[in-house]
Image 1 (cartoon, rainbow over the protein chains, first blue to last red):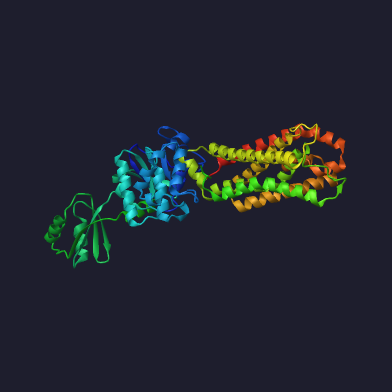
Image 2 (cartoon, chains in turn brown, cyan):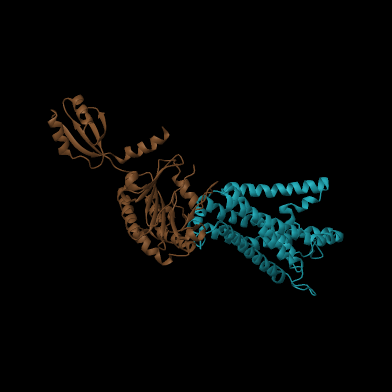
Length: 281
Length: 259
């Protein structure tokens, strides 16, 4: 990792975004004392990290690690004993992740999704103020992913600070308040999610005379960029500067009848790729 | 708590406990029935009677060290295989705490095996054999303490290897091979080259605390005995030093490594 540095504000849902191999798990491993950094330092709750601070953080790192020969419930009992909190919490968290029926089964009999859900339950034991999730939706079906999203929203409402590492962009966009983007161990950008992942609006237009259309639209006030894609022009506007009917009227006034007019948000995926490619190129 | 439901653990523990009396009984039976007797008494004397019982039983039982070692290795390497050691640290144990708890398990296991040996010796000495007159029951029972030192040393070596190697099968293999190799080196160096420093190698130094009981009766070399007595404090000190070194290395390794 190359000198990554940032602050996580209390009560935020902080997303760590990056392609595979960008260093998200390494970063989280370092701040939970699983990996040893060669340089640099980190602090939790404004103090130097210690096992006490780890007891206040519910962490899910990379894969669920439990005792295969013990039941789900037993595993949670061990986790609660180590955290020195949450023993009474076990039924509540099991219910939250819908594992109550299988709590007495051995961990080795769980499916991947169940293992993941048990790991999330373990994080929630004792209601810690901070949660660190490394790819929490790994192995979950779409219903499970939606549930976790709901759960994170709920936890954020309760005022918890959540650090979420993911390569699922739309999940990050849906729940996070802040985001940091990593690529190849470097921090590309960090800040409020609305600023970093701004979604530009783009308008798709087409007409029989594409060259003329391109000419007139390029000089329209508020147009940032015009791209041609097959027989459609993609026009990027500054946010909120133009309405569809205005475009239609403008084109008509200039002798062009539009055959296609559509408002689209540029996909987060292409935005993300652009952000991460800008650095490497 | 971690091991309460672990079948393998209980099987190995029971094996540990049961093997001590049964192995000793087998040897006793063997000696009683298979070796020539002179005037109704075995040529080996009565090694299973007091006060020799302590030395005999502890020496016999120390041959069984592989069973507790397998138990320790299994418990330790399991944590690494399932990466639960990682989770324990994440959940709130410090790295040193994790190692201390494992060392405590080893200590406990050594105590348990020592207690079993104690009662086994008591049984053999008093029930199977008549207690000779003018013998104090607990004389020479220091061998029990020596046995404890030997057990805890072997177990800690096994644990040290587990922390470095992390895989169950490989650790057991290397542990066993090392034990055999050291014996081989010791006898080679001592008998062929007369080097006595080999007495202070890790395995050998604890072995020397409990000399083989059977040969003594035949050879009855009293000057050898005096020499041995003289060396006991040295052996114990060195064994303790080794133990300290094993612990320090294990803790250092676990603290510095990436989990």
